[in-house]
Image 1 (cartoon, one colour):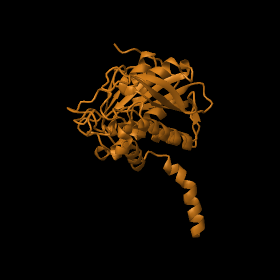
Image 2 (cartoon, one colour):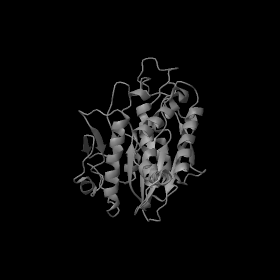
Image 3 (cartoon, one colour):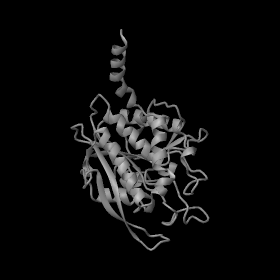
Image 4 (cartoon, rainbow, N blue to C red):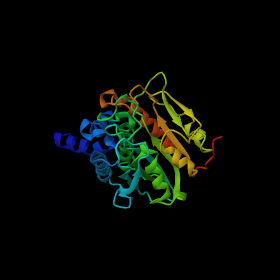
Length: 310
């Protein structure tokens, strides 16, 4: 076999390997979204719009279909209730990409991309937040990196799955789940076509003693079957509740089954110290591999039946 043949075979094989979750790409996405140049991605800021554009570019590169109201974007106006500066209305947008497998039902995978900006929109836990960049590497550049990795994985998968996928980066989550609630009140895909929703919020600071928490285990009758026999390169545990934590709560309120992935709180939560160098990208890669196992198990089952959690 000559070197040209070997190079050609490697070229053919590259997409197969490239679709797997990658710690290097996770790190790259987080460093882009949570750099000081992004100034904390505060809702309504120029940098928040740049983050949305970055996500849209990735969706386009993966070959996803735009399913916003303006290409990949679903614009809306966010209201700021606790604010240090006087502008109480800000432009925001969800970024929505659709993987159309010709199926009747769709799985939603989501993460919010906004954070606290320069500490002037409220919610910071720093003693003097104004003027300080809140990078939000874990909250929630880590979740967006996971969203992009899963979008690439399923978009580049050689096999067509029996469900469609709706990949959504939500705006204005830090202001009260406003992006996800806006989508659910103005859906670009009928809600009765949604099977379940997977939410990632703060999956970048894995603690091996705690493990990754997976909420929403009680929101569908099928989740125990989905989890049966699943092992992972990270420790994990389940929680039945589905109505807290992040944008998953908005979907739960619409009686859509959810799973919510979260590596837990830390001293840098909602503070300027939530920086990219503190992210455990290798552990996040393993969390994403766990998510793929669970999603793939769910792909084998009929549409889930929502069950409320008491």
